[in-house]
Length: 194
Length: 397
Image (cartoon, rainbow over all chains, first blue to last red):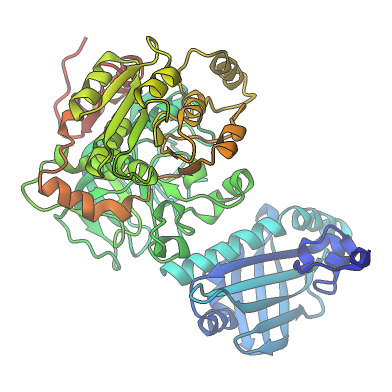
């Protein structure tokens, strides 16, 4: 049957085959994260929000700070385990207004990474599909191993949560929070329950 | 403030906890005037709902007075409001389709992962109902933080007592949606399993929607009596073979629609239910769907099955063959409360719906733990309990 080499229409990040997954962004198969979220806002608005990277720091959970040098370069400070941070410069490698932003970390990044965010029209009336694909190269050395362990466990979770938070912010004007009082002595009424 | 907190299975206490604060711009804070204990609170009390944490404040049937508003709230201080138990942002795809209980945004990013694994997609949010649904504090307390207060709260006109409108928060629209999901046509016979608050309101709603007959099933005499007063014919499953009775009463056709207002902790005498109970207690399974099985078997060919009763996990021996071969339609879901607020408030104002018959007890917040015990142990006598934070404590035994 001719169908033996038929390739399906799935995004490469959902492939069972590691080599195919790695093609999503030129990267190591084990360190690729892909996630799509639909945001009920026009494509140009979602792109414009994302393109101004400074906006993301206020919404993404583990991003401590993003210093935007110019439209092509920004400095990211991201929380890591044990109260530490990891930092890198991100350089925009591709920018198609309303459609796509791709980046790559500059040399001397604590964690080499590259990725792309695509902005796709959802079905009519349903807003924009935002598809993020990110690849990480864990650094070498003992601290590197430690970060790698963290990254291999966490980035999927973190990407999922951050995309949800961007969606919440763009759709509702706020990042959802269930911060509430409880009978647990350690928690204040504005602390996020988990 | 004082609040009813969950500490563990069959362990509910009244604690002093911090007052809630405005967290997001669309928030409001209300001072609770009435807060009811729901049948689904018993699932928490019995320890069947995962992701409860010791110290969680209970209560999702709440109303009160607005005392504080965030900059983007549309409420005004002093307004009386009933708060839908579902927390809904009003702007996501699901909210715009009026599927409020499926809101994509209210469940914070940190608490959505588990339900995404369990159900395929992160679930919506509710007050006082475990961290699976967001971990929002409940309103069995003196004060409550209300997120998205420009979308959910129902503003109550002066002159309507709390008792008349409180159930707009959950059980009244839940009974209404259960009947709506039964897609009632003229001449229809509707069978309702469970004559607790939701079952009774489903009976009332089915009759208002034009059902020819409603047949209600339970075993508590007082609940069956209330169902009868609403206009239902009643069946006691401890005395009667339900499928046989429904078959005979409908001339061999069967009920056109069946509504399961029982959910995951169904009683029942069948061997299947005994096996389910053992499994639940040994954590091999959680749900005991005896009522649902019976409803599917009893339903006529081509009929509808509506499930407002709460289920959370997996069910064994689900009669999928009967569902498919008879061509049944199954509809379910947490209630899209906000969708029904206006129409139901209007019917209350017009006197077409009176919910006060259900209320058996009022008590102070401080009596909360005793009331949970009574609600659990004396379901025939305690048909609905309302806690009022300001009320004086009963000088009980």
